[in-house]
Length: 335
Image (tube, rainbow, N blue to C red):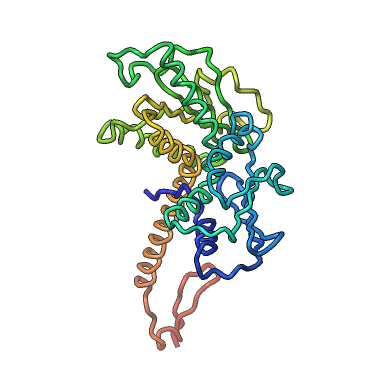
C-alpha cells in the first residue's frame, strides 16, 4: 500500500529553495491546500526577505482548547529566524514570519527548520494527543495497570469510565475522540461513507488491519470497526443529526497500549501515523475503486477485440446480391 507523507512536499520544496545560499528573494503569494480542508499561505507582504507563513484549519477552535498555541510556541520559538505573530493573517488561524536575512550556518539546523515548517499541520493536531498522553501517564501513576496484563489487552473497555473524552470536529459531521485511561489511550474516528460500495470496501480494508496484527505485526494497535453503532466510550457525546443517515456513519477505534507511548519519540511517531489515518483510509478506498474500473475497462476492451475478430467478412461479389430487411434478416436476390 502507498503511504501518505506526513509533511507537505510543496511547503518543503518552497522553503528548501528559500534557504539555499544562492537564493534570489522574489515576491511570493502562494496558496496550498492539504488534506482535511487545511490551507496554507506563503507570501511576502512586507519585503522579499521576510516570508509570511500562515495556516488555516477547520477545527482550530477545538485545538486551541487543548493547548495548540503553547505547543507551537514551544516548537518554533527556539529558531532564531522565526517570529510567531500574536495576531494571525486575516483569514488564517496561525502565522509566523521567516526572516531570510538571518543567516544560518549550521546545515542540520536548516534541515530541522524546513522539516518543522513542513510538519506544521501535524504539530497542530498533536496538541490533543499530547494532552491525552500526559493524562494517561498521570492515571498510570495513580492506578498502575495490572503487571500480569502489561499491554492492557485483556479487555477493551477501560476502568476509567468517567474520564474526559477529547473531541475534535475535524471535518463536517466527522470527529476524532481521544480518551486516556490508566492502561491505554483510545482514539476513535467517526467517518461518513456517502457511497454504499465504499462501506463494503472499508470492511475489507479494516479486516486486513486485524489480520495483519494476528499474523505478523503483533505490536500494532488494536483496531475495532463499528458501523452505525457508536462505541460505549463516546455514546454520550453523539447527538442526533437530521442531515446525515446514521447507517452511513462508521466508527474506527484504535487502542494505543503502553508500548505505543513509552517515550517522547515513540509518542510523536504514533501521532504522525494516526493523524493521517482518515485521509489514508479514504485515499486507498478510492484507489481500489479506480483499479477495479481500470480492470473492467481492460476486460471490456479484450471482449470487443474478440467480437471484432469473430465478425464474418463478406465478399464484394456476395454483398452485391445480399439485402437486409428492416429487422436485419438477410435474403439473396437471384438475377
